[in-house]
Length: 320
Image 1 (cartoon, rainbow, N blue to C red):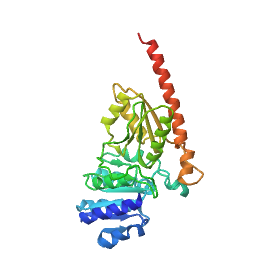
Image 2: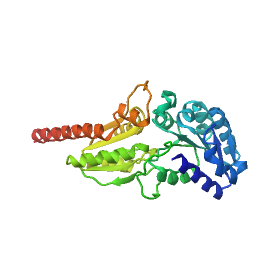
Image 3: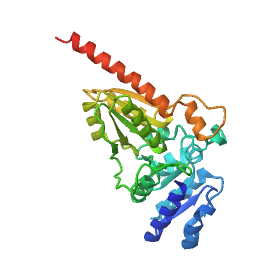
């Protein structure tokens, strides 16, 4: 996805002279094409993420469109006060791009994990939070993000992620994208975990469960129209994300559901556990440790589905 980001931001900068790219001392060769074509609009601020956000805010105040890029955990946690005060308080249209989201840098240890970024950023007033599933979704959302009137965050993968789209979809911020139709349950996935969500749906189909799949690329604002529909028309709604079960997509959906008069379907949430992963390994290893595999997800969802069927039968017998 980072290669797609480099290509897309360069193309966007060709069209809009207000776009400025800032880097937190990574991706220098990645942006060679950008630097060759726009040498006066690229700044490597070094290992100084908080300063990077402050500089971006200053550039935005001058009417430019800054895009700040670095590893997701450093972009968010090291610069949280600057994001809150310089961007949200001042309502500055800066796009923060966090690369290697979730467990993308699992091999580098827990300092590089970003499994709380969605939670802390969606709590900030005025912040738009985006989590594309693949390079095509990233290209579609980036063009919209640079034209927002306020701050935004895009969490992306590192490299080599499989695609879920054959071509660039026309995404709208705040509107989830349907990937598969289904009638029994709804799987709401976000980010680079979507290929695993689709494989989970395949396994559920083999068990006789029809699962719809949606790419919820916008975690804030939520697609409330979709939520109303899936909670009304299915018996089980499942959120799946490479993020803590606390405060991410699942947390956002749970908050929305709690505010509804007639919530309807049961909600089931899958994500990383509320603990630090102290052993290192590649992303696949970390996903397995968190239970984020098609085998484990399909088993757990199948069990919940059977329970919901039993509860429904019992309810029907009790009802007059």
